[in-house]
Length: 434
Image (cartoon, rainbow, N blue to C red; front, side, top):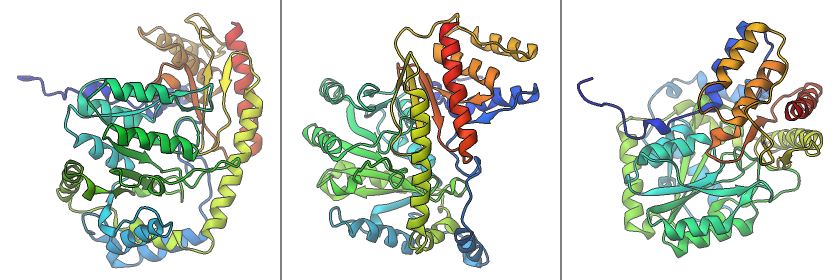
């Protein structure tokens, strides 16, 4: 090319959660039966959508207005419905004008980071959901800035690490929380949220809280929406229906903005996000129309409780099968539908293997693991996939120095689910002893 046309942050745009799908597809062609436990899509994993939700969507699909553009921020009646839900709790008070819809939270994440001044950094958790870390790193053209989540303390934030990072890096302008967390499944108690808010206020930062899994907490854990706690702190909450309804194919997410009137710089930043949306004309009309009808339906809370109960059972099955495996650090998942498992330091190396009967598969895996720079946990993930057909995601893909893997809790057949985790436990033992 005459000029270098590649964005300075292009190298930070990685997404191993889907990248590993290509390897899995190649193994399928070679005769391996694969269990896809890498992507958080309940529908693809076979979760049944109730008829009453389908009837709502079908009824809206028969209306001509569902096929048209809607306002840049989203449908007014839906935004008002969501604002009323927040305001009923009696803490942060917002209006429909404080809500902006996007084409999924992925779209929101790209704009929230992409419209920051390049020198302004948002510190996020480590490990973290790679869409956040990739977008933050790409906007700055540098590695993401992070604070540590501690696998020896229920995956809670290392508050000393967060405070010191903020104190000694004046470029940090905001803090990201994912609660409940992806990839760890941690649910943050109120005291942790308040401490993070306190740090933001002390250093004059804004806060982003990804709450896409907020209504999927279990095992007796309790958390609070960030709107209940922020007070006058400028903040953004990210929400959506892809995981909760679940309706990932709707590509329908939104942000709630708190206290944009309290800081002129934050106000201009939010205006820039809205202006970028105006270029796109509209958001997703049909799913926005469905949101009030689904969330206010008399069956909805019962349906959510059924889903939480199933994830709780799976969480405990997985924990009971893995937490006593030598060489692992395992925490019980309490929210979302992911489990992150890490190996103790120095338990992985570049010589461990697993038996692979299919010669073509073995050769493929050996080519993959011999690539320069292949992390030890990615090596394990490739061998696990080739020898058992279980497809998970290496922890090194989540912007962390921890080595392990993330797996979903979405398999709807509990017998199959149990067998998957029994197989993983046995395979880890064999791998570490090889």
